[in-house]
Image (cartoon, rainbow over all chains, first blue to last red; front, side, top):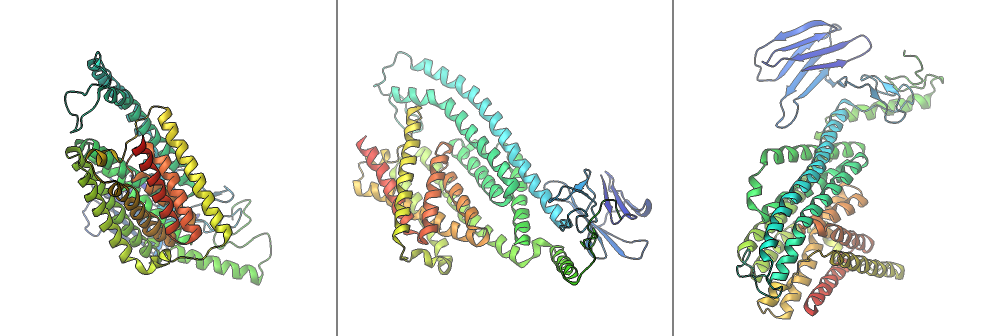
Length: 267
Length: 257
């Protein structure tokens, strides 16, 4: 994993994190740190050629990429992204070290702004992924449920609508006509429910571009409710795919925190 | 300096105009703002207060959801109106504790505010539009053959008296849901976000907590109407009254069907 920070037109700091704990830190191509040792502090102190103190901190996250920060003389530095940075107001290209846009003069986001926006973007991607999952899951479950209910409807053939079905279902006695109606609707209900949820998630992902906090909050609550509602319908579902569920919830919660921090900073 | 640059990327000064005192003052302010923004945002006192409040709201929502889950599971094996009574009691306890812990901030919702005739007419118009839209939605579901869950069936099957059905299906949910969503949740969110976002979030939470995606659109509409009534009247009572009336209408419709 390689990271790069452009401090000004003439100074660039690069960091390389190897698979087996190797860390190489260079300033303008000249190595200032190269070691494989395990450090409990998870930080590297170094000096810039002009004498300013540099500090690289790296903290592994529970979910997602590790957080890596570079501070020069105590100030957090904006990491150089793969795509060139652009001003939000005039879309002019900017450098990571620009504090103001050279084209329109508006202040550029700070390093922490960029980090929080990254978390919001991850949460938005999680919402989009949920939308895709609901569409695919809905289609798959529709096909499975349709096969099962068609087989059950065949068994009910020849029985009168007004007759009571001989065995109780989940502690409830059904009339055959009532049961037939419910069985015919069941696959469609599964499909509709998933399509409604997918539409909701798509709407929330779009809304998240303008108002990330409410959109991510609603998406998180909806996802939790879906987990609980599925758990009521079939308690075994709670144990299914719990790692994925945890990862999605963790991304969404991180997104809420980031959106709240950005909102409060701008207020 | 880069070609085509009109402003200094370091201090924001307009390079096409000579520096004047006002311009420099503005630059100074910009610099101060940037310095403030460079502080760790997640350690700012405003964020800490809001994050704690959001966590408290998550607890209220989570406990209501957990209650629905626990009694939903119980309902799978025991079909008795007593399950409904116990669920309502547990939710009442959660909501009343949440209201009591924020009483000083919610007190204004329990007062009667003198409103103008125009305000009264707007509230009545909202009620009429809401009843028309919600009825149309349920008629549409009926038209497409969607089986709709009847909330009164288990009470009538167990021969419970009419007053108990109205109390448990019409009045109790109206009071508790208004206290939870338009009281605790909307008011807390309004202190954190703007009024419009708080209004939309409480309506969404209200709809999803009913645990049935097919009811999300109708209940979202309900949440919006009751939330708007609460915003407009600065009181919880108009929404509570409309909510209870709507529930009573549904009960009457089910009992006469």
